[in-house]
View (cartoon, one colour):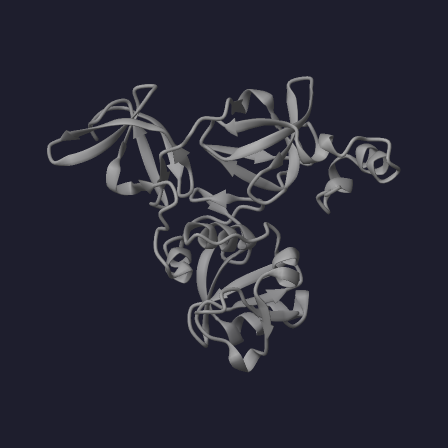
Amino acid sequence: MMLDRRLNAYRPDLAEAALQGKVEAARFTDGDPAMVGQPVIDLRPRPDQGSGIDTQLLLGETVRVLDRADGWAWIKADADGYVGYLQESNLCPVAASTHVVLAPRTFVYSGPDLRFPVKAALSMGSAVTAIGEAETRGTRYLLLADGGALVANHCGPVGMPVESDYVAVVARFVETPYLWGGKSGFGIDCSGLVQLALRMTGRSAPRDSDMQASSLGEPIDREQLRRGDLVFWKGHVAVMEDGQMMIHANGHTMTVARERLDDAIERIGWLYDAPTGYRRPIAEM
């Protein structure tokens, strides 16, 4: 039986029962398949709109519904195994997605024309199902079943990486607002930035920085740092842009920002001590 290591934080009653053999494993490993039907959904530790968020799910992400009660669904994300609560109304039946948003942010228009009213805004990583295409004044649009339209060159076919260099993806988020638990182009945290950027280059990563620090890639020494390597502090992660400069979503600037590693070590040290480790997430880089 495989249980998410954060299960105790969400449902200690079920976690304890599972450990004692009182709950069928299928309740955790199977569940009912569903898909996120809204642009960005907060995943919470409790079925309470006033509780903080742990992470987010993007349009088109698939989940397993493990429990339902009072309008809330307790789910497990297929992509990274994260569990939490979201409002059941944000889910819809699973459908085959055709395209993924590759731009950091884009709009869904009410028709294939940039002058039409905007219906929604989507983040990089969102998945949609296109039923056709149209062109207006030289701009191609993907058409959605609900009448919406997206700029076609902001998207790519499902399975097509945005590019091979995940650091270049990270850099596209510079100046994006920092958001604890955020995982989108509208607000993102340090580990969410790493996870989303790697995902857009066809690689998977755990959601939280402590999980990334213990399992992502291979450990290295500080003297080996190069582009694409990761620096970890307690509860924080940064991406090296080269041997000296790093990019990270941080609560100091409240944005995704560039910073010299030496400056960051000095600034962060008084509160969180020295870095706890360094890792190379992609061996071939």
